[in-house]
Image 1 (cartoon, rainbow, N blue to C red):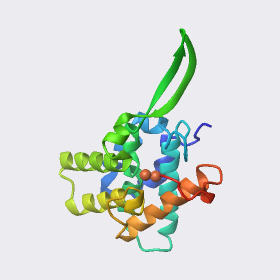
Image 2 (tube, protein in one colour):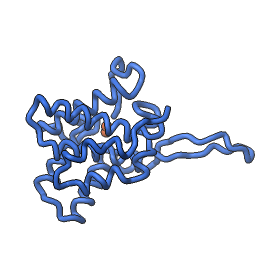
Image 3 (tube, protein in one colour):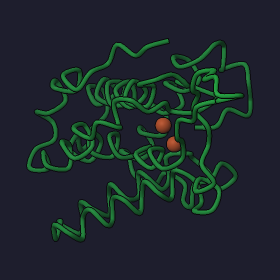
Length: 194
Ligand SMILES: [Fe+2]
Ligand SMILES: [Fe+2]
């Protein structure tokens, strides 16, 4: 499966990034972000699946923001960065036997397990990015909380449960995208990982 999402697909979200457009572009303009899958064997596990899933999460979050009072800047930037660490969790590897190339496929990197998975890496990348820019601390923390809590519970790898409206909506949008949109009948499975 090939994703239909492109860099331009994110353009309608730009108006909500406010003064944090540079943090918006940092993710969207990363060429790997448009190529990577969101998993190797679960939801959105195809080329471009990560961008596709991210686009769905932001779109769902903004739709909810029509009904619930939310800070859209936090929601959009957190949506973009929440799975950014997956760029370090997966890599593409070719299978060559006897000099014959049998194609390539996505595999998990050892880094995924050594560094606490994509959630910790997403947070680390975000904090590293913010410190280089001397970002407003309150905004950086609000987005950081969304990233760390987007799996919803410690059992599923979050270090905190969602404690703000934006974090809760991001978590729910992540579940809707992962369970209902990015795979086959994933809602029937209880152990879906994001
Ligand atoms: Fe996600
Ligand atoms: Fe995630």
